[in-house]
Length: 282
Figure 1 (cartoon, rainbow, N blue to C red):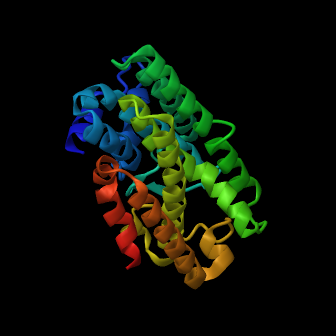
Figure 2: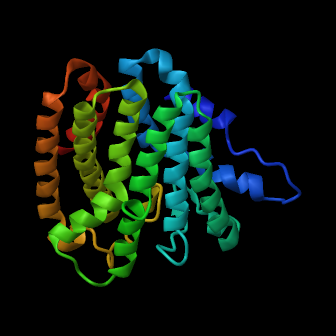
């Protein structure tokens, strides 16, 4: 991921103006680190199938990270989670002000599509990439998840509803990170769909683990505000810690089965990830 990290640093939003903090605010949360999980998924798929396309895929990977970062900036706003800490750093509205945070999020959202549009890939490939990110990042996906999350604060949901919430809010963006990688290298539709389904389950496991972290870790350990899920619909709030751990285990086993159905190349791409996320359970 060092190549990606370097690429990110070299390609931060660059906008010269007489605004004293605007450009700095656009890059601040991108530079604050994070797991780079979504770009890693996309680039992992590209690297094992078509390493020659890796450089051309970098702007698309950065677009995913920008889009994800916009969602975090807005998620942390006073109107939503009102969180002071993210990635071990002060959130943008805390560091600057709320207007700057809202606008930085808006900018990163739109810039993500600009980056894809300008990537050195075939036009039909880019249209498909834009379609996927806008479908699962927009009103039918991530935004729906956010809306449910915020509207049903203090109103308990069923397990099925919580899964719908987190499938939209978190899992879909993880699933399309894999599928977008598959589109770049031209994998057939069936393989794309299998990767997408795998990504949805991975995203739910990711979210369950996040809920467990929120319940069991301090802010220092997690690098972000924890303990704020008490009035939110999290797996831990609904099921309790013990049952949540069991739910995570069931998902981990399902993921393992899906993983074993993939061909050797895909297994190679996904192996580091499987070790990282599945070994937490054993």
